[in-house]
Image (cartoon, helix red, strand yellow):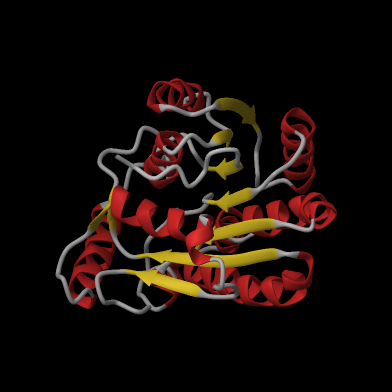
Length: 261
C-alpha cells in the first residue's frame, strides 16, 4: 500500500495529458492528492477521470497554452482561487520537436524549441511565486533532461540547460519564503506511442537516421543500456514533490540509468 504523501496537498501538474505527466498525475492520485491538471490538449480530461478512479481527492482541469505568459498566470490564479492554495507545482511541459545537427536548424525551429522546453517552466514559476510566497510555503519540481549533453538537439539542450540554471537560482532566492525548487533530469524514457506527436510532419529518411542516432547514443550513454519507464521517472519526481526531500533544494537529479548528462 502506498504512503499518502500528498493527502491534503494541492498539486499542479503541467503537460499532464500523456507520458511522464500523466504517470505523475496517476501516482499522486493514488496518494490522495488534490490535482490541477494543465494541458492544451482535451485528452487531459481522460487523465482526470483516471486520476479520480485512482483515488485523487479532487481534480480540476485547466486547458491552457503554457508557452504563453498570460495563460500561465491565468491558470495559476484559477487553480489558487479554486482550491485556496498551491502546494506543489510540477513543470513537465517540454520535449524535442526536431532531431538534427545544429547547422540544419532554421531560425524559426530554434525559437520553437526554446519556446517549448524553456518558456513554460519560466512562465509557470513566475506565475506561482506570488501565491507560494504569500503562503510562505511551496514546492516546485522542474522536469529537465539528460540531453543537456547530447547530439542532434542543440536548441533543446540549451532550453533544458536553462531549466537547470533557473532551478538553482530560483531556489537561492526563495528558500527564505519556505519554497523549495528542484529538478529531475530524465534520460531516455519509453512512453509508448504518443497520442500527440511533438512534430506533426512526417520525418524524411535522413531525419529518421538522425533520430536513430539519438536513440543509440542515449542507450549507449546509460550504464544500464536501456530506456526507463515513465514510472521510474515519476518516482523521482514524486520524491522531490514530497516532504521526504525536505532538506533538498536547488538540485538537479539525473534519472538516466547512470548517464549524468
